[in-house]
Image 1 (spheres, one colour):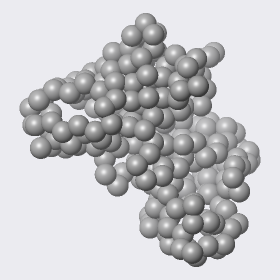
Image 2 (image 1 turned 180 degrees about the horizontal axis):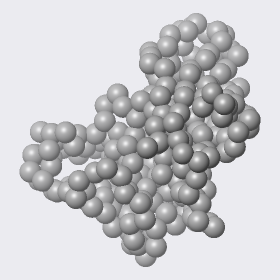
Image 3 (image 1 turned 90 degrees about the vertical axis):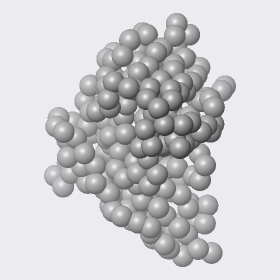
Image 4 (image 1 turned 90 degrees about the horizontal axis):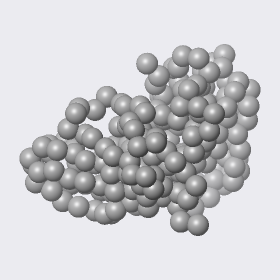
Length: 115
Length: 112
């Protein structure tokens, strides 16, 4: 059973560019959350998707947007990249039952470097 | 809002030493509490959890007890191994969803 898979594992972008990161949830999971982990810091919640809609959102600007597809996979898009967007982006999947999620499983992350 | 504070590292121990990593939290309602571990170059793995006051989570020799009176969830292990070297994150989730709030992480280095 494949766990949470993310692609790409690393990428380098230039300031002002746009980037798309991808996530496939663990089999049987229907909810995807995205986190940003800056170097030496704990992960910060960006947003969560369930049934193809944004369910919760953290304190991130509108430059950060997402999408969930019918097969539960998800994309994170970041526009107008800033140097400060350089971080490890983590995807986590879970199963939403009775209004409260089960345990979240994390992918290996995508290391984004903005130059 | 909800927040988590954990002891700063790095924590350096010799093999077979006793480990404590302190974690305190601020939250409304009745959060669930977690410890995650991150090995170099990898994502996060759930180490243990507790969902209500006085619950003890345990896994792989690690333990933590949910103390509502002191708003704490300290991680302990009686005898650490070199393979335990990693970054440990304390986290909480609110009562109505799985949005996780993490502490800054504590680096653990175990010497042989």
